[in-house]
View 1 (spheres, rainbow, N blue to C red):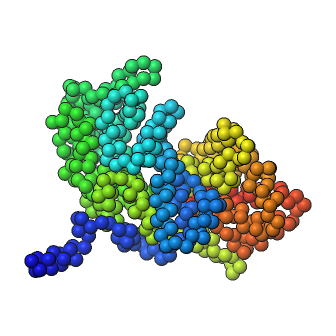
View 2 (spheres, rainbow, N blue to C red; view 1 turned 90 degrees about the vertical axis):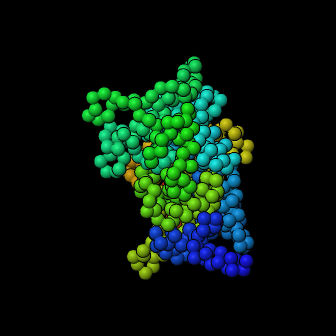
Length: 502
């Protein structure tokens, strides 16, 4: 008996990460270092809280939250902050909206966006398995008003090739577009493979019930046919997964496909599904995908160890994105210290190197928090506050254009001029009663304290000595102190540093 126990322990030591061993943040850091290089130092508390809150809740922390976090001396405060953010209503709304935007085509109307966003936010709040979420989106039937998950496929009006392209991109991380008309010129995908995959949606039907009312269902009969390039006649295709698994035996092809996603020959951590979602979440938190492109990763094979570990952890959590994000947020790799900008002269001070620009869906919320307008002012009617938020959001989204990853301002002369003249934005920085700047000028007598607080609110850090000296000189250089504070406030909010993750 003792010999067997010793042999078992020795085997575990030899194998290292056994199939049942839990993946830890330390395991992730080790694999991260192998792929991306050494992580030397952790960022400070302010930088961590700002970065994490932007990634998970789509906003920046307010001054009170930041100061409370910095003064908290408990050892596990970062993990507590991560769990609190992931379980918050604002996280469910932000992550739900981002997922819905990813699923919908650009021409989707506002009503559909709102319905699918609400469904997605509820799924996020409940921490549903992404396996179940994907199964609903791919295989559910019924009226759109009864189950909003059907809105994803309804937008393709029963077109099997369009539906197949979207499903492959969203849930398998594979771009099959080029194989639709011919064999892919740069990848191994054949035209026949695309149409075998599209055949899974060949019996998908959309029935119009009335004005803007539709029902999604799957016909029990019917073959998917297509005329291949250079072929004389069209031919029927058997429904297959992209790895060749035959799904034609099932009367419900889409359900069979949804089951294959996580239980096919390449199951678990090696599945297209697990690898694709891990790749997406990593890109959300780190700014770059782990492997390939978000919608075009390579087939399972020689994956880096980091991808294997994260996919393993994702599968063992029953495909729950909250647990995957929590694992990554705990790592030293995520909490790394931003590199310092190179200094050109002896008197300059190191400032954070700017990394990922904020997305359009983060910028408006960041502006509102930095100016204290994320909540209604005392005595302000709620509908007026909502109208102000909508006006600012539209103003900033117009600056960002269609690219949600583009920096919202500061990248062109046109954007800078629009921001200077933007009515909603400029209304936030005026020293009017009920505004942050008015309170600072009235209640804080010291210029230095005012400037420090402005920097804390906007940039989530204290100003350097050089910055403080320059700002003081600017404030004291003119007779209109209030106007100069407004100009400085505007400059901080319009800075590239404010618009980046750091």
